[in-house]
Structures are given as structure tokens and as C-alpha cells.
Length: 406
Image (cartoon, one colour):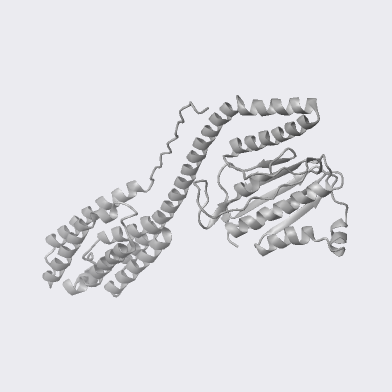
């Protein structure tokens, strides 16, 4: 396996908004030239020097800031603030350069260049930023006109609606881009796991399975060796299928189905979805997988705040402890981890005899508060819920829900 060359999957990240930035760059230059031509073809300015000074500033600003509108990284908040201020200033000083502009319904000094400043807000920050900028432009136009005409209100409404619509489309495009990038990463990781699974299955897993079978057949101390080999085979299969490195598991009492406690979680990033503020919940639940416990996870990191992840893992441990104590030595348990947009759901199910009706209330009355405190209490402190469903003779299911935002 070590002699194989590892093929690295390259995930190509596409930028759906980059064409919008290029279009905005061209729009700003074209509309700046258009504003200058409007001034050159009109001779009704009472103070043409006011218009000349503003248009000179506008031209220099537009050409000097072309790099700022080439991408989201360079288009900073200070730049957007100055850019919008120049547009608003040009609108408000239009009557100073041409007193007839109000009555003749003439274009403002920046003309349609103003829309470029609003569109920059939309592409950078989405529809909320676009609504803020277009609202300021609308107020400036109304103040400049004094008594705005129907055409003025029409233009103001058009800019307002168009900018908000573009901002919303940009937000949707960004979300789609993130989803696509994550899907490509998962696909690349899945391919690598499949390659590793093939190599491991042809060597290590087959040897462990053979040791388990031969040890069980021989009996005595060899049976114990076979049992350990079987546990390691399951742990290795979990490692290959999920891409996780389970913490070291101490061997429990197999006859009782004892459950191993989760390993201590650190908050440091390791490239698997963990950050300084969160941990991958899969890493805390994977060590539970064993001969009688099956763990199923989404195949991608499930980040949660470190404290919430540890408490949720402890609740799962308590549920599995109950399986080991009450479901019988031959009972099997299944852990299902689900990652939703606003919450994380962990379901623990077993095929034991179930809980008789009224048994939980009786246990609480006797002072045995495992379900009430270890499970429901932890989930309540996290702002989540714990629902227990048990049918006599059909096993027990515990559903644990934790919100993304406590």
C-alpha cells in the first residue's frame, strides 16, 4: 500500500460573481465617459466650472479605482463609502451648476454612473447593502429635484428594485458556489477513501478477519485474540469509511456490550472541519463503533461548538450505557448522525426488549436519574431536546437534537 502513488484530487473552485465584477468595471468607465459627454453637449449650465470640477474628480476617481472593483477582496467598505459619497455629492450639487435642472428634469451630473456605485454595494454585500445604498440615492434624487416628477420617481424605483434583485441573486449564487465546492470536496474524499478501502481490504482487513475466525474456532486464549482482532477490524473499517481517526479504545466487557467513553476533544483545527471554536462531532462519536454498535455519519465534517459537542457526545454515551445495562448482552445499537442547516440530530436505537410503560418515572422516583439528567438535562442546557421512544419488544430509540445557534 505504501508503494502506491497517492493521487491528489484537485477541487476547482469557480467564482460565479467574478463576471459581475468585470461587468461593473466596464460599466463604471462607460458611464463616466457618458456623463462627460452629457456635459459637453449641453450649454445650459449657469456655473459650468462646478460641473467641470466634479466631472474631473469623477473621471480621476473612476480610473484610479478600477483595481478596487476587480474583486470582492479589494472592494472594501471605506472604498464603497467614498464611492457612494461622490455619487451623492454629484446629485446634490447639480442645481448649483444648472439651476434649470430641477424644472427641466435634466440628468444629474453623475447621471447613470450613480447606479454603478449602488451595484458595487449589491455585489459586495448582497441585497441588504444594495437596499441601503439605493435608498440613499433615492433620497438624494428627491431632495435634488425638490418636486420630483413621475420620471424621477420611476428612475429611483427602477434603481432600487434592480439593485436589490441583483444583490439577492449574488447571495444565492454564493450559496450555490459553496454547496458545489463542498460537494466536489466530498466526492474527491470519497474517491480517495474507496481507493484506500480497496487496498486495505486486500491486505489488513482480510488478515484480521482470518485471525478472528481461527481464534474463535480454536477457543481459549486464541478466542480472546480473535475477539480483539474483530474489534480492530471494525475500527479500521470505520476509519476507512468515514475518514476519521478514532481515539484509542479500551477493550470493554464484550459480554455486557460495554461502551467506551469518548476521547477528549481538543479545539484545534486538523484539516477535518475542526477549528479553534468548534470540533467535528464525528470524531467524538466514531470511537463508539464496535462489534455491537454501528455508527453512520454524513461523510463530511459536522462542526459544533466544543462545549456543545462534548455534552452531546456525553448524552450519546449515557444512552449507550443504558443499552449495555438494560438491553441484554446480545443487543445491537445504531448511532445515526444527521447534519441539518439549523440543527444537528443524533439518533441512538437498539433492538433490545424496550422499556416498560412507566418504568422511567419509577426510576426517577427511585433516584436513578440517568435519562433525566445525563440525557435530557444535557440537551436542555444546550437549548435542544431529547425524545425517547420505546415499544416493549421492539427496542428503544433516543433522538437528540441540538440547534446550531444555542
